[in-house]
Amino acid sequence: MSRKPELRGRAARLARLFPAGARQAARAPFVLLVVVLLGGGLIGLLVLNSALSEGAFRLDDLQKETKALTDEEQSLQRDIDAYSAPDALQRRALELGMVPGGDPAFLNPDGTVKGVPSPAAAGQGAVYNPLALAPEALVTEPGPPPA
Image (tube, rainbow, N blue to C red):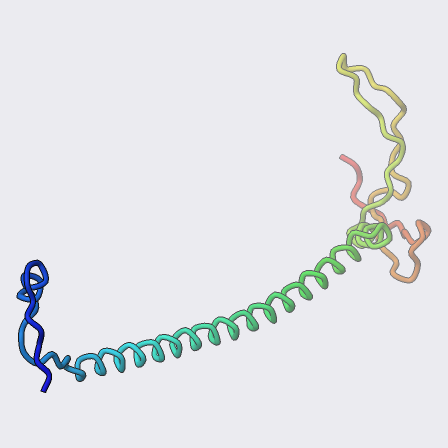
């Protein structure tokens, strides 16, 4: 058997700080710690992967919704453009009984009139004729007498 050498001086004082006897570390707590850390890491990765997958599905849904809303916006913009076209505005004005105006007159700040006003061409009882889109499409009907 090997015999421990005798320590002297400073080495002896340091050796007294360590416990004497068998120095076998307990392995069960270390193994348990490693298993818990590995299990926690795997569970964390699983949760992270699930969250990323859910985010990807949400992103896909939002992209589809954005595309649908963009298509709807473009369709509505085409409708607005069609309704605001000059021929569509003229047709709608005629349907409402409006007639093209005559020459305008302007009032100056001092109250004088600039220009010579003229009445509308077709009068008050203008009705839209859907068979023709020209100004001749106006058919006059007798309206109420002017007050």
